[in-house]
Image (tube, rainbow, N blue to C red; front, side, top):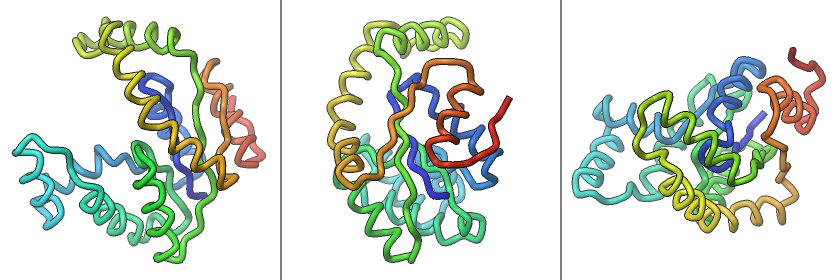
Length: 192
């Protein structure tokens, strides 16, 4: 099973990705974690990324794609993966499709966790209070949600046009949301 999880900040995609990883026994690949690991390992791509980030620039799609190519070629991804944090734009979505085709791997589905923006603001405000995170105040959260909507709308439409998008209600208990995802990807065993 090769899945892309899409969802706004606070939608629960990181939580559900971790649960899906355990349930499906495939790796959860977060591009943020992958980038940090490559930099820490001082790999050639990691060194390139470190240089770019030191300048205050965003890591290029080519560097991220190179890291994903390397990651997808490892044995633990043969049965699939759950991709979180990528693609974030239309060019990345197209590049991901090309990469998987080059590697001879199929793509199963893009799962979008849908949660009302005001509920996301509440969730993230609660997280900010619990974890002492200044970046999760209501004003900055609304701005991040607006940027997410602008950047991700074309990606969502891309997967919709490819008939690969499934929109899941991201509101409910952890088990309820996981069961909705499992039902959408036609995995029979319910959780809980």
